[in-house]
Length: 92
Image (spheres, one colour):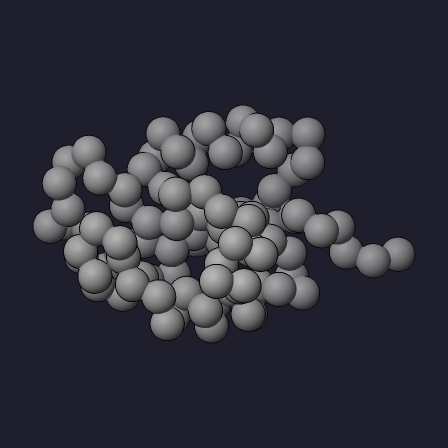
């Protein structure tokens, strides 16, 4: 049995978050799986914050439960993350 397509959230916070305006985004929350996890991390190491141009730091990972994906999307948005699927990051 293969790994589920969406089973992990990876978060990346801007390394310069303390200098962001109060209402700006803090980083990116990416929905992925273990297969693409390393590729996501590599790609995010190359990307910079759209608010200030500084690099991202890996935040934390958590399990993505399919039944609660919409709840997670809303929660991450409330926390100030831009929510993406791995394909939106990997194939840019």
